[in-house]
Amino acid sequence: MALLEAKKITSQYQKEADKCNSGMETCEEAREKAEASLVAQKKLTALWETRARQKGWKEGASTKTQGSSVQSA
Image 1 (tube, one colour):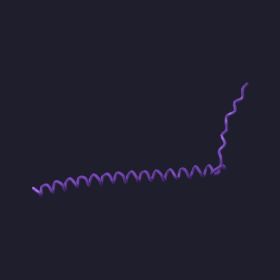
Image 2 (cartoon, one colour; image 1 turned 135 degrees about the horizontal axis):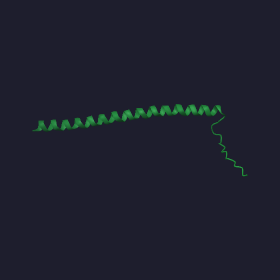
Image 3 (cartoon, rainbow, N blue to C red; image 1 turned 180 degrees about the horizontal axis):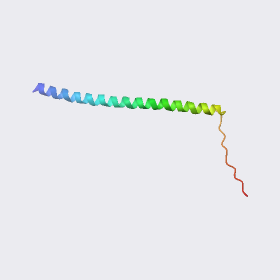
Image 4 (cartoon, rainbow, N blue to C red; image 1 turned 30 degrees about the vertical axis):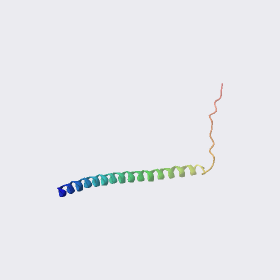
């Protein structure tokens, strides 16, 4: 009886370990996708920042908002 019970417990532990490993793989895949997305966003941000600097933008400079002027007849 003790051997049968030990096999049953071992099987339960193995199932739990398999679930844990599966969860870790899923988590790792999600982390890799998030990391790739972050790299892409950083590249895009750098591109827009370069374009803005080419047009005269300087970091830390206050921005001016332009209101639309409507003339009445």
